[in-house]
Image (cartoon, rainbow, N blue to C red; front, top):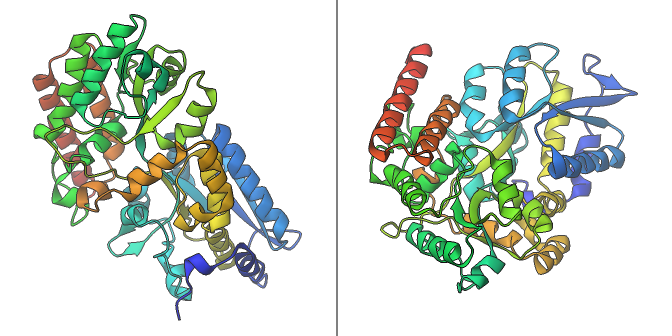
Length: 441
């Protein structure tokens, strides 16, 4: 009979962890403990929360010692892993950004967690459906979902009120954002209406919210992509939207710098911006005004489809001792318990991978105090499953993002939409072709 994820308590998982055998002397140990080296990319408040969770796990049992080691950003840690993968210097497990999925699979240096799922008939169906939809590839799980987020729209409720806008009713479409921006600028000549960071991830999310695919072959889900699928009005609409606001003088251009954008919002220089839901706690806690959080906008000509998952998952290194891998698997399962996920969600703003966490009292109390935290959860759960919202898979997506960021910046700085967009399409197609050629496709 299948083990039900939602019925597993923290105590039972700790017993599983404690039950890992110490018979294999090849495993790395400290005082008879099996050591799990965990590379991650969390900093700031998320790192503090993660360290607290790891410390609680280590203190709750004496068979496994998890060592959480910060390795820089996702972009920095992935090359580090590839440089040591398959050697004794590789970590037991590593946190990898969602767009690194195919890079990890293609490396051949990982142990798919499906091996451990099958070994104990472990049930993954209790996890958030719109999250596991991304991480299930070719019918199996290679990694365990961990920190997941989607973009939301943050807005200054005080600025809305001053502009005669309803602070409890956020704009839902591109056109409504434009109209609100004009009213905000008219009411405050020191404030811009809207900011959109030149960030490839945000382009992908605004595209998915229209039901648009980033790449052909079902976003790379049916087979490896051979070309882009966004060379249409859905893709171009995002550039045209930013161009109209830029021309109107209501757009705040922060380029690719998210820190400056958030600082500008907190300083009252811009009234609305898009950013990860994982920034919720930081933005709300530090704003000297009331902050609203709303769903991602979409063109009025398109129905809202929802969002694709962002964030990262946990991967297990291949070639490690069996005892060490079992210890890492026990820790991965511990991280998915409702109690731990509740702490993670409230402490960071990331989603709870296990929706049973939302029934925990700590979450209910947090929502009473900070109801904005619930908006991203509602947006995710309202997402319509499709290839568009499932997210694209290919190893060159990091390169695609850089190309789209440069293109967006070009438009922000006065470039024409048609020429810039067409050039971006050509560059991404060339990158896809080059990537396929490198792998003999």
